[in-house]
Image (cartoon, rainbow, N blue to C red):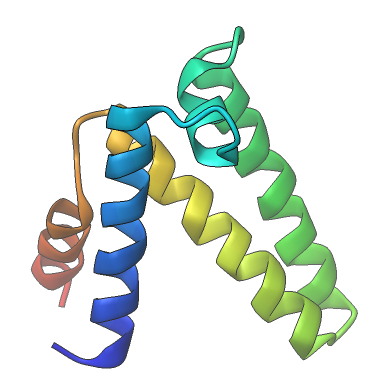
Length: 97
């Protein structure tokens, strides 16, 4: 496992922990308890996708990395909501090789 795998696994573990413990001061926990439910995360995915596209269009590498990280984070939250995990994502990507 390389550093990227470790970072994704660590991040997903934090997301799963926040889902279970729901600390009051956690943004991640707030996504799991939001009054809009799953729609809150879906809206964030749409917003972050747009921001990725705009950063790419502007050739802003720093902003693109920042927004791509936001997009991946919110995608991982959605996978957690759907009782999926990083292994499911890896398996699908591996099958597409």
